[in-house]
Length: 164
Image (cartoon, helix red, strand yellow):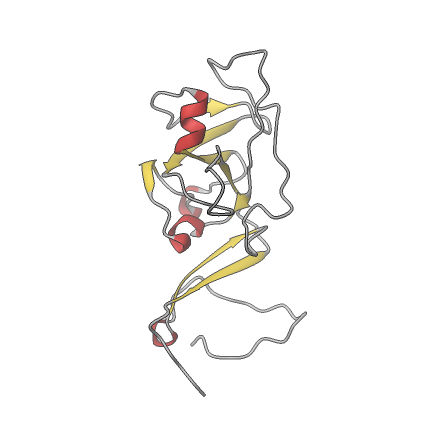
């Protein structure tokens, strides 16, 4: 049962299941999920990979997101897979967007490792999506797996109108 109220400032327990009677379909955890997913996330530089031009320094946006983040937002996986609790994914697993793959010049990126936080394995590639203003060009993005996210994202179907 998903019904209930939440008082601000009090912790709540939410299981990772759907509540179709209330139009709630998925949940995902992450660190910064209010509005622009990059709020308060600094660009990360110093990332290297095989074939990188050594004299250039690139800055990537790299939010930490939890399991089901990609499914909750309906982001399309174009190669590989999403983050999975069953595979014990952690901070060493990353997903790139198409712009990041193109910038890096990676062929067959799945399973390759980039030098980020001591070595991060690419497990998936997502189609480019707007993660900020729709007026902005989509930039290279690295999604980092965070199995211990503190925030919850809830997707509610707009066709469900419930009044108490």
